[in-house]
Amino acid sequence: MKKEKTLNFKVQTDGTRLDRYVAEVCPEISRTRVQKWIEDGYITVNGQSAKSGLKLEKDQLIEVVIPPPAVSSLSPEDIPLKIIFEDKDLLVVDKPAGMIVHPAPGNYAHTLVNAVLAHVPDLESEESERPGIVHRLDKDTSGLIIVAKNPVAHMNLADQFKNRQVIKVYITLVKGHLTPETGSIVADIGRDPRHRQRMAVVKSGRPSSTVYKVIEYIGEYTLLEIRPKTGRTHQIRVHLAAIGFPVAGDVTYGGSTELLSRQFLHAAQLEFTLPSGDEPRHFESPLPPDLIQALNKISGKIEKL
Image: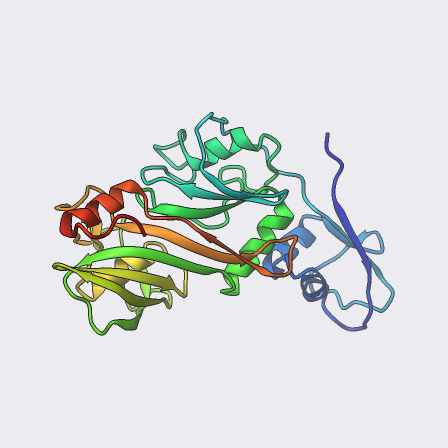
C-alpha cells in the first residue's frame, strides 16, 4: 500500500478564508477541489476538521492529505502508444484517429485510457473512469494529448488549461477559399437543441473563441492553422461549420467525404509548463499519412507538414 502524500504549512496572515488560503499557497490545486477536500476531511487546521469559510489565524498549522487514487474498474490493454514525451508526472501521446480517449457507454475497451493503464500500471488518479485525462480529442481527431500520472500533476495541468496557459495548434482543411487569411470566430457554443448528440452555436451556449490563419490555398480547399482560445466540445468543427467552411470529412457538421472518411483535424502542437518545471515546453506532431494522402489528392506538391 502506498503511503499517503501530505502537504504541511503554517499560516502566515490573519483573516483569510481556509479555502482561499490553501488555493493561493497551492496554486496547482483549484479552489473548487480545495473545497471538496475540506468537505471530505482531507484538509485540517491544527489537526481538526474545518469549514471552507473558516477565517484563519497566524501560525495555525494546515495539513493537506492528497486523497488516495480512485479504484478503477477499467482493464489495462496492451495497445501500442506513440509516446512523444514522458516523465514522472505525465505522458504526451500522439493519438491516432479512430482511438477513443476514455471509456463511455458503448465503448468500455480499446481506448487510450486502457492503453495508458497498461503502460503506467501504477497510475494514480481521482477519476476512476477517466484516469489521467486532463483534456480530450475527438475519436477521429489525431494528434497530441497529455495524460497525467498522478493527482498533483493532473491539478497542475488542469489549472494551466483553465487559465489558458496551454497553447494548442491544430491543422485542418476546409472546402472553399476562406478569407480573410487571418481572423477569429467568436460565437457561443452549446448543445444543439434539435440534435442532442451535436453541439451548435446557440445564444445559451458558453463563450467560445477560435483564431485561424491560412497556411495555403490548395485547389478548391484551404489548409488552416487553428488556435482555439477556449476548449469547448467540438469547438473547431462547430465554429468552422458556422461560418460556412466545415472541416473536410466531418459529416457530423456538414463536411464532405470526397477526400477522406474522417475529419481532417490534427492536433499538431502543444506548449505548456511541466508540473516539475518552470519553463514552457513545446511538442509537435507531423501530419499522419491519411491526411497527407488527402492533400496529395488535391495537390501533388505536399509530401509532409
